[in-house]
Every structure is written in C-alpha cells, then in structure tokens.
Length: 108
Figure 1 (spheres, rainbow, N blue to C red):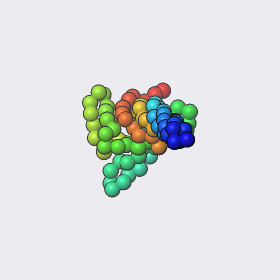
Figure 2 (tube, rainbow, N blue to C red):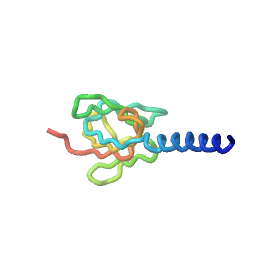
Figure 3 (cartoon, rainbow, N blue to C red):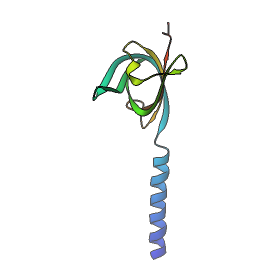
Figure 4 (cartoon, rainbow, N blue to C red):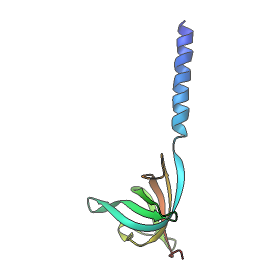
C-alpha cells in the first residue's frame, strides 16, 4: 500500500514538472512601436503593431538587450514609430519578456 502511494505521488510530481518545463515558448515580433508604457518614468512595456495588424505588449526587463545598427542603446532611446524585431520568451505571445529588441530600417 505505501509503495503504491509513493509511486502515485512520484508520477504526479513528475507529470507536473514536465508540463511546467515545456510551458514557455519563444516568439519573434516584427512591427512598429505604437506605444511606450512607462513605470516610474522608465520604459516597462512596448506595444508593437505586428505585420498581421495585431497589437502586442512586450515586457522590457533589465536583462533585455536593445540595439540599433548593431550598437547597444538604452531603453530611453526607444521611440513610438521605430520599426523593431523583438525576440521574446513567455507563456504566450502577448506580455512575453523581450530578450532582444533591434531597431531596424522601416519595412516597406
């Protein structure tokens, strides 16, 4: 009886942890910044209108790498109207954490 309980608990925990390990995904967003959402006067989220005309909010963390012309820039240099390529990671497309933000020339 005790062995069955131990096996059942082990199977339960292993299934929970294996599901959690696969719950995050990587995303790429290409579009134009349409809004900067500030927290304590610093960019906290960017709202990007993607190529499918959908608006997506992406979290800009302290670890987010931001660049323009292969040069690192500060969050404060992000502007509404910038065309960006954002690689992000999270549970879903909206509100995922931006890992990299690259400002690129406007897409025709």
